[in-house]
Length: 185
Ligand SMILES: CSCCC(=O)/C(O)=C/O
Ligand SMILES: [Fe+2]
Ligand code: NI
Image (cartoon, rainbow, N blue to C red; front, side):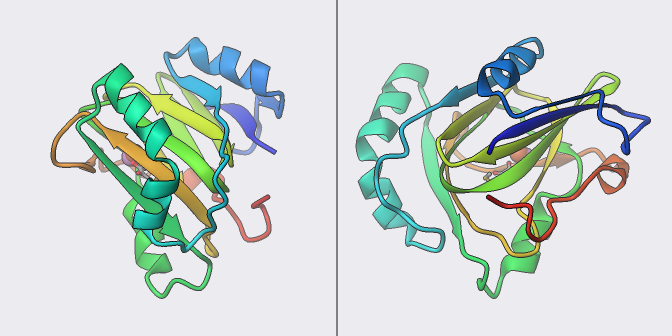
């Protein structure tokens, strides 16, 4: 089940709000300019499937988003728990960073944990299959796929170079909950 928890940036152990109601999640996130929508993850794809297979299965959705929102680049992150690169892939997104473009991700299988740092609050969002999240340009955040990652996400970029992260150098991400083993699903 998708879930939102909101914390004060100084109290990582005590969420001020916890909700698995997708309408409430969307409503809370809308206040900080984040899009949270449910899309039909209709094609049967599995974590670890080849990116080309996933692009082909979701071609119609991808083309529509490109036409509507002007994305320039699209790629796929598809990872299964036995991926030999899983530790390196997990580490890449674990520290606080931002992008100079909106971060738009469509989870077509599995799950992962996005955490956003907006002013003095921290928004932890467990994204599941069917969730589309759009995080505004320059929002500080991190992403944890967990020690046994299992997800497929389609990523949409307005910049031609694809994923470029700017790391803030803070340790805030280390103080907040990680996506632990067994939390997925
Ligand atoms: C959910 S896709 C992989 C993570 C990613 O692209 C990103 O930018 C995390 O901050
Ligand atoms: Fe990101
Ligand atoms: Ni990022």
